[in-house]
Amino acid sequence: MEIQNKCLLSKWVVKLCNEDGMWQELLRNKYLTNRTLSGCKKKPTDSHFWKGLMNVKDIVLSYGTFKIGDGTQTRFWEDKWLGPITLKEKFPALFNIVRRKHDTVAQVCNSSHLNISFRRNLTGNNLRNWNKLLLLY
Image (cartoon, rainbow, N blue to C red; front, side):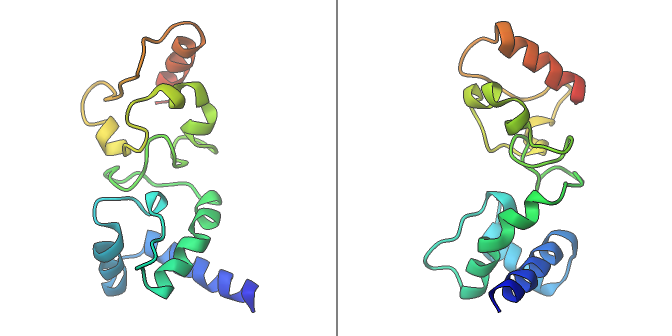
């Protein structure tokens, strides 16, 4: 029964990500507001259904990639949108020194240059990794 429940909840997560409807809009307005699904955490005050979705969402999202669209629902560093792994996993040293770790693709790519700032100057391997990231983009 537990496996079946996880499968059914996973189906709801996929529908929440990929479809538009009344219930999706209701959940997005109530729980997501200005956050991405992958950036949400469950809270004690959440409904039982939403807590169930939060329990399976990381597993579901780990098997998929994102279509960017306008970039407001895809996190630049923490979601799989530019290849089979996240930029956080591909460039961990850069992720460790970036100032805003949870920015969306829209926030980072809102101008002709990437809107990313680091806590220190990029030198050595960090500079090489930055140049590799720019080539991916």
